[in-house]
Every structure is written in structure tokens, then in C-alpha cells.
Amino acid sequence: MHSPLLTSIIEREALPVVDETTLDRLATDAAFSMVFFPGDAERLAESNDVAVILPELHKAFSGNIAAFVADRGSERELQRRYRFNRFPSLVFLRHGHYLGVIQGVRDWADYLNEISEILSREPSDPPPFRFPDGCGAPAGVHTH
Image (cartoon, rainbow, N blue to C red):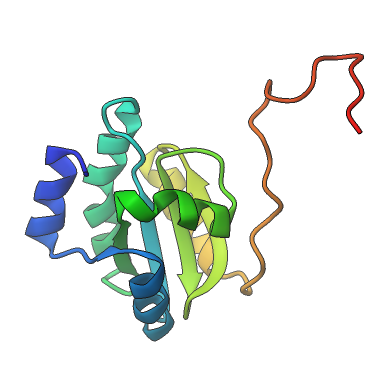
């Protein structure tokens, strides 16, 4: 379940909530799309910050980027598909193909610059999944 704030934004902005199947269908039809992965808003204060920013980003790009919100029950499966390691995240697609991700919250100017750069990329496979810093094996321990 999404936070009450995000739920009100979804309703007010008529944002589609997507799972694996609906995302594939809707994103393929859109020239560009951004998918918001809020994560658990009760644990992640930034989740509601990005929720408020999402409709403003949609407007800033003159509606040329379709905006979707990942269904909470589908977030982990979609996270594995796009290989990001932090919530909240915005994943960007061109006709359903991966362009890039912005993890966490940014300053407004940074969003505009990063999104413009991401949209100029050619579609690619998502980068390999990386564990956050500090999650690896301790120094001196070899894993096989």
C-alpha cells in the first residue's frame, strides 16, 4: 500500500499504478516514461519528497514523459529487472527500453539536468546490480 500522500497524488494526477504486465504494455506505447518506485514511505522519508516532485517533473517536461507509479506488490520484481539498489527511485524508459535511473532525492536543477541527459541516451541493458557500499565481505575475507 502506498502512503496516504502518494495515494492522493496518484488520484489527483490520474497516475497509472503499474505491475510487470501493465508497465510493459503502457511503457511500450510511450516515447518516454518514468516509473516511480517509492519503497516504504514509513521507513524512507525521501519517498514522499519524490512523490511530491513526480507531477512537477511531468509538467516540467511538458507531459512528454509518461509518469507511472510502481505497485507496491510489484516493486521488488521490477527492481530486479532494472537493477537499482535504493528506494525511492525513478527509472526512465524509451518505448519500454531502459535508459537510466535516478536514486534518492535531488535538487530541482539536478533533476532537470540528469533527466535531460538520461533521455538523450540510447536504450541499453540496466547496469549489473551493485550492493550498497559497506555490504561486501569484510576486508581480508575471500569469497569463492
